Amino acid sequence: MGKPLKRVIVSINEGSITKVLGPWLELVIEDEANILDIIMKVDEIINSKGGFPLSEYKGLLHMLYNPITGKFYKQVGVHAYTEPGKFHNVRDNVRQVLPNGATVVLIPNAGCIGEWEKVLEYKEFSKAFQTHKSLCAII
Image 1 (cartoon, helix red, strand yellow):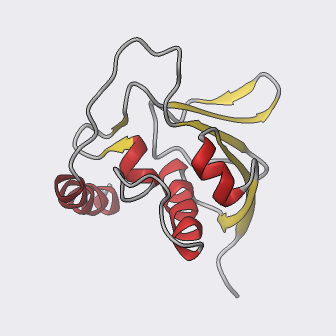
Image 2: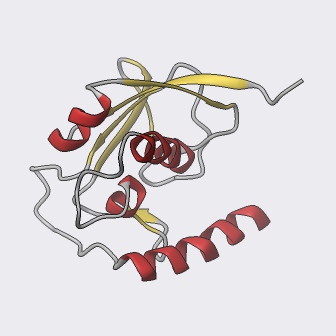
């Protein structure tokens, strides 16, 4: 038998991405998936539909996450909840396994953020993410 699976709902509040995916996306993912796994799955779906719509980024993960710091950029809004008032702090704990039925809301450019971080160049991002994945596998 295969690995256990769960369902997660994802919303990405960015107009050009919403045009590709629609307002909500239901994913069936591995049971131990975390927020980064979910974003990588969304990137796979976007790439299967013609590629990432924002030319300055190579994908959603590149746009949202800095593998050198192990954190989302300051301008990114990221929320995960299973029911109203039951939030999961995936911003500060990217390795946290999300429960079945979780809803994830990603806001790539949250308007209420005062500080803005420069996104890594893709080559630097890719190199750092490969190291980051290796370290995650060890932990």
